[in-house]
Image (cartoon, rainbow, N blue to C red; front, top):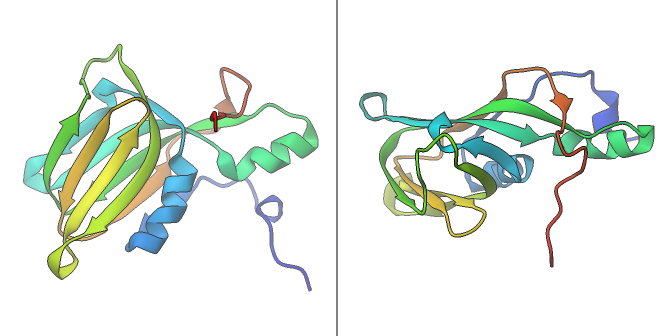
Length: 157
């Protein structure tokens, strides 16, 4: 008996939830290199919710695309963080002409399950969310489309 692989699954939108730091590692890997304009993030203070509409590189499809010789894909996804008590930013503008690339999502635990969720952006940008608990979802909201660069993101070592 063989383990299942990504190729075994039907083409389905990604829908994930993270409730702890281990779950968050998977979500961070799948959102690495997602891009978004500054005006596609919002904090609804009264609802204690922070959301970003991302153009996510489909890392889960990369190997299949390489094997089949087809173009790499991106998909629009919503990254939603619940139970947010406050938001701080560094080097971030809400300008629609400024495009950010998400590098990592990390959690630093505080007392009683509370802590700080940090979204590290390329360059020197960062978004820090003070949260009551890790309560994050990632949901694809469009069909995949050919990545404009037709390349997989790469990083210099």
